[in-house]
Length: 258
Image (tube, rainbow, N blue to C red):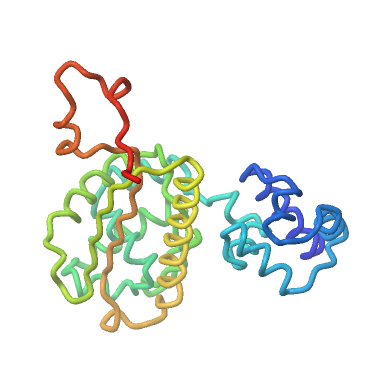
């Protein structure tokens, strides 16, 4: 299948996901509906038109290209057996994490004070799990892509996610490179969906930046955590205003003054 055809399929799928008709896209671009139908059926569009479509759909061109390749639809996971093994042994999990960040085995042993016998034991276990290939001289070759995703309902998230997020938030975020922002607003479903897509893109950008920097020596990198969260939520301070015995569903909505 040609790249042009893949892009067209990705565009049409995106329109369907957003609930957009050809007429909606035509109105947003200021052209006729037949023009849009002709463009999306023939695939004859220049880069300027494609950029305009991406802008009104609020999607980055590279995100569209990733979608056309299928990377956004088929997240790569480890097997459940592999995740169970990593969740069961934190030291094994830590060594695997460092290897995925581009650390060499010698640097892991030296930097974390691991005895050679213990390091080899962990590497051999990762080899048996087919997460890496153990080579002569305790060198390794990963058998999995670095950009894999943990299963949403898998054992690794079940064991580590809550612990990591609580530990991450135990900070005043006063460091020079730290950033913390909390906003509470009321949103419609369409706006919330748009923000979720942007957060997904931010996570993808974070992983891509790490992939670019993996070739840097460890002394030129530092561990950076990014917590991304968005959920329906009413702050308890606001909730305390509700009259006693009035349920959230029956309470009047707050409206902005005109």
